[in-house]
Amino acid sequence: MERFQDKVILITGGGSGLGKATALQVAKEGAILSLVDLNEQGLEETKKEILKIVPNAKITLIKANVANEEEVKNYVQETINQFGKIDGFFNNAGIEGKQNLTEDFSTEEFEKVVNINLNGVFYGMKHVLKVMKEQGSGSIVNTASVGGIRGVGNQSGYAASKHGVVGLTRNSGIEYGEYGVSIKAIAPGAILTPMVEGSLKQIGGENWEEAGKEFVSVNPMKRFGKPEEVGYLVAFLLSDHAGFINAAVIPIDGGQSYKY
Ligand code: NAD
Image (cartoon, rainbow, N blue to C red; front, side, top):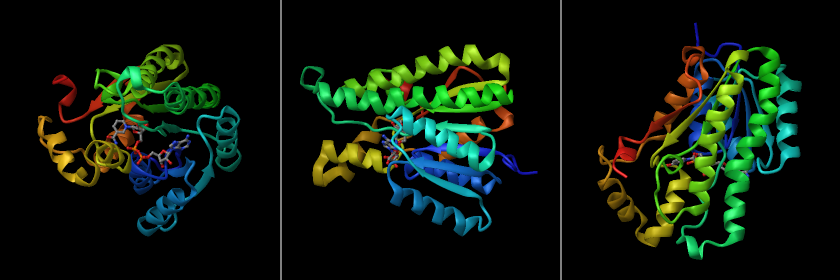
């Protein structure tokens, strides 16, 4: 029996990187998918890749900005209208923002990063939790980061927002456990997605691949993580197999967070 047969999985940031890898994994295991992103082209690409592997997959695509609460309310409602329930929610869309010393970090940039990474995760939880509480079941996986459990440097907005995601996870996990709903966060280290490529380009410019090699040289495993490795973890956390994991933050970073 497939783990996600007849299960409705909602994913934000489904048009790229970790959201896309997770969508592919749960689709292979039978999931019905509602994919949300700002980037419509990315969403179409994800759908195309899934249909190549799972030709009869049920997928709906919703363009929305997670930093806008009305649009969040709408993507939740759309998913319910289409599929009638939400079994798993990967609350994942996020950005890194420009890297800078705290004193040089612009207030606009700080607000932008926090609006997407923290407010967006809060809005998602707020509107999905109503549905899951009523159902009496559900699993939410929020995407935090190593930067949500340790200091990384040059990332004021990112660190503040991701520490906030960890706080929201712990707070709400305690509130909703008794309703059969579990809430977890993942704390990925450097996983080679378009976001990390962008980050390496900020550090190394044209020589970003060299910057990448230097970057991973301090990782205990001396390599980047792969998006599909995160997909396997999130699929497990969204499944019934992880029903007793609640209010927990799971690192997936090759051991990096213990070195900071
Ligand atoms: P990515 O850039 O490949 O994918 C992020 C997706 O989110 C994109 O498709 C983008 O269009 C979408 N998005 C961005 N802002 C949005 C908004 N306001 N509304 C809706 N969609 C929006 O990046 P990724 O590496 O897959 O990152 C996914 C999550 O993982 C992010 O929260 C990121 O902070 C986190 N993360 C990534 C890494 C890593 O190494 N890749 C490490 C730690 C945490």
